[in-house]
Image (cartoon, rainbow, N blue to C red):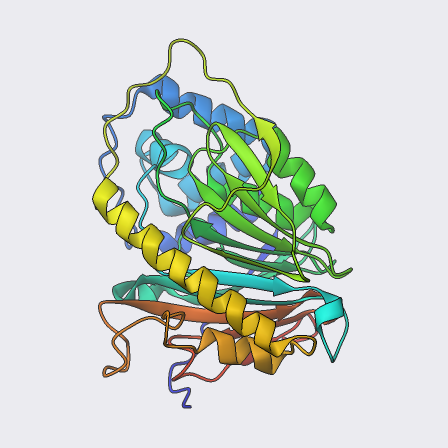
Length: 361
């Protein structure tokens, strides 16, 4: 393998407002806000209120973002708190419990994040050194949050989008990025994170892989109407862009008068069905490979699974260095018990993993 692509590192320090200002200044002149005027103002406000009720510092950071970036407040409020657009790709993620491992302690987590290759230019490693809350290491292609994050207490969170649901009028809820920020900033265990996931209404269908230093792990599948949790079976748990069900963690009723929102931009239901079929193949393949590695699942095992091309788990046009136009744009391996966060900045079959820890920098 080769690792010609570098990993850009960015440090965010201070309080929430100060970190928001830092983010805003970096986005000034580069982030173009879409026109979301079709979203009802009351829906946008209720999404903002839901975020503030869950995690009040999120509103402080938002104010800093608007200030630092010079953004139009109304357009940024809609985009930050109430955006619904989503893309489904080829994400795969899994966690193997300590009893499945032959080395180290705690779980080993692996994940491939699939997205439009054009967004590789936005990928970077974030380090958060807050005046309050936990230090974090995250990786992202996204201006609003980290789909991959580890905190200093050993809690790891990763996300994968789920197909849309047809549950009637869209209720307001909390954006994934704010939920991940709150969990990674305040929680140290899977149990604490599940408590957060169960009490909040989720804005968009999303699965969350959560693991901690003790060896606990879970997959949360959340929609605006219900939250389900799936625990490891035979010592591991696997997720992709398809709902697999699980124990009911919470349900949310919708008011009789909901919001009839414009259909979010995306490929449509037929494409969702195709994506779900591919996701089921990746789940089956990762499950089979994990069984083959037991009872000695290691970091090297995770690399072998994440570079597998049969499902494929490592996704993209492998004749091209970037795997364009849609591919695995990064791959991650994490061992929360020892605070090791590894990232391959592209196709993991072509890029070496680089290790980051809280002792670095």
